[in-house]
Length: 415
Image 1: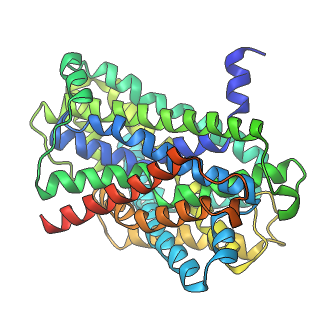
Image 2 (image 1 turned 180 degrees about the horizontal axis):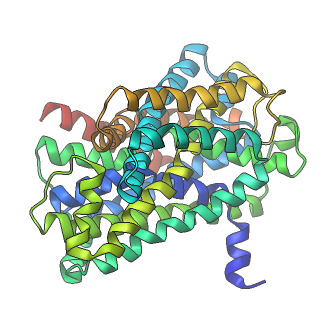
């Protein structure tokens, strides 16, 4: 077995979570950013990286040490209003996000095939639900891990766009900030799509699933984590978040070098984002951009629906796991299916896919801080984590992330 194959095979929840972070909502947000401001917000990739690592690592540690998902820990530690407020924020954000992702996927397939997106919407929704209900967890993980490779399409597309790399590097390391509503909304959207509520629930739940896959079927048997397990989780999360950041970077580079440079500062449809690449960067970049939307949606929507199902099932203390057959975990799969159906309804209500993708990220950015605060409090509590409470660097990065996102949200609404 090669070193790369061994390294890839040992990655798990962190890699999948990082790749799911670059779902169609994320891709649209980065595309809107590149079109509107060129390379000006490339600095946010380096800025957001330690913040997203800190939050996801806290969620991973929470799942590993307690043997429970985030909602399960909230149910045991806090009053019911806190638990259901957290779940309510998640459901609102996820419903919009699922609808946005399905709309983006369907619009991309219409570009490629010429078949109306209305026809693709139920096909994607039904395929994803069947896929999640009938496949075993170990098969899903393998499929998810291979789906992460589709994100390399955006790195190739950036190279084909022939950007001015000197300007790219300058924008990466020299922050450019504009104090206006559009710039701040885009900033909060970037933060919201990189640090999203559904990723918190998914990360913790997948650490629990990994433990179940090892035969630890009760919360008691899953409690605790060795130093080696925590080091492996850190490597996994760092790799996944780095991968997410690299893809984010090259999408902004691609659209900044093409759409913004050509004077197309506003994207109204998914077709515009990809088709504008064709005369500037060629058919290859156009197809890579469109196919990437579909591939990332096939990863992102299951994570969104799955995180909602985990949260509600843990909150209600229902049996629920992606490794369970449909009948014993009927309520878990019902929540999962309803999440996709509600997102589908938003699409048929006539919302513009790209605008919904972007505003889904803004909503995530506004709703994430209360959940980040809960994650920091839980993972800093010895009654929850025992001797595995947050090291100071994680705790302060967590508080800093919440404060930055709150401040950006307030600034956006004031301006």
